[in-house]
Length: 230
Image (tube, helix red, strand yellow):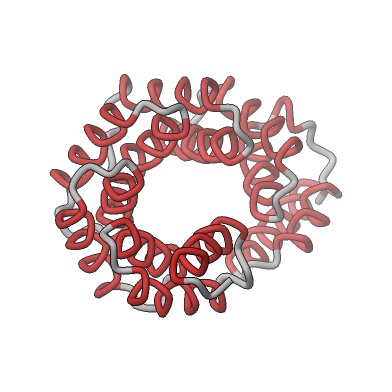
């Protein structure tokens, strides 16, 4: 009887997660009697929920527990991917790189792995290595919008090849015209290419769609300064 109740609660939590009700799923999962340190599947779902609501310290705790128990290699790969993302966005680049290296060593080569690794490397001023990973990502999927956008942005930011940067940003934007990150990259590449007036329209839309993202705002400020609007 107790086992039936536990199974039902677990199923309810999974349904809530599919409906993106991560707060409710967490509440259900935390009511279970199981010890997460002894139940890797529970650790996995707790980690996912905490990651989705951006409580990253709790997410790291449970995802690392799941990885340490090696119970399902596909889910372990997913945990490592999420761990690398959390470490990257919180500025812990060495830890992010470690998780990504473990994925690649295990043969888990994907567009997401390479694009995330590129971000981690570029954040550490390792531009050449970052570009190499983006080329690997595009070898796997030449039309991947995220990889194209990242390649375009890095090339523009690094003043490497503005023409190619613009082509990459344009290709990404054609696939997802309302993506604020892609609009920002296009605007920034135009600015870097000496086309500040054209850049403004893209950055303005990016600002609106991203609710004033600070990176986009900083780009817009620099463009407006260049055009004499501030």
